Length: 337
Image (cartoon, rainbow, N blue to C red; front, side, top):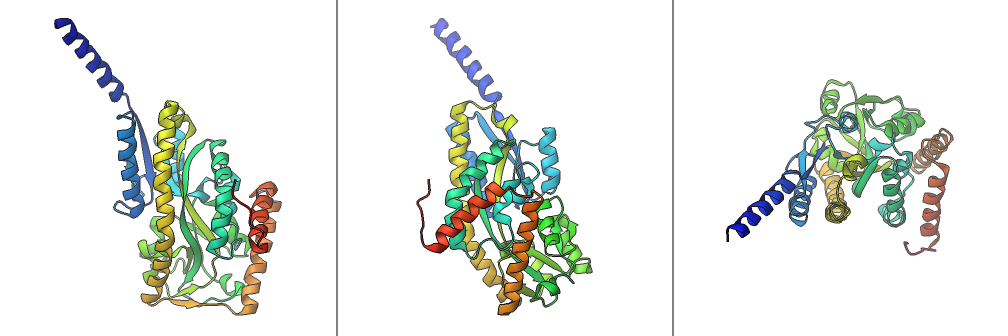
């Protein structure tokens, strides 16, 4: 009996030691605590903890307490954080083609987005993995629209605005510059004050972001042109993720990936609701004329051509995206691989 008690004590000690040495991923995000994103992530973290018997834990830092995406990525490089939930455009310095979806006016509507993403998401996630980040899934934020305190319908009008771009998001900054706009980089935390003081008078952001951050209170117009498609991802550095046993890696991919898929689906409905909410709050939805809309598209196409010349995205990646768009637009839809 004593021998069995001793064995039990030893086993208990070993198990306690094993769980005590569990891997904890510290994850930062701009999403505020209590948001649908954070609720889904915390639920997934609890599922992972249970499925791995405590071997994998997540500690979240929501609401930009660790800084904006630029600061967070620096903390990840230093090892102070293991991961982040952030807009994919922030990762362009690691993998340029992650901004293929962000090219200006490349999509006409969300049906095109769905068709392309079913065929290209996997390759973009693999590209991030090959460049230092394990991407656990993508989640839509929505189309970004130009919103301003000054009426704008043409590209020439836009060039006279003081336009915000996220500090540390070179992809968005290059897009603005390609339109002939001199952008003003600011951190997320400084935008509301910038709008209030007149430092900036225009932003390009999905409606859900404008409402959540209360920027809409300083704006009057929404240009009814989907300029950019914005999506987010949750990544963990390869150096941290590779320390997990393969079985735990697969568990994290499966459970966190499923949570991101749910966020992705919910975001579509949230996007439409937020666009309606902006109009209910008094913002005017402004539709450019036919000639002006054509000018926006021509400028977008020229901007994309310049970005390709500079290697902002690869020609190979762009050609693949365009191939899927041609398939969809021609009606020759092909099954996703």
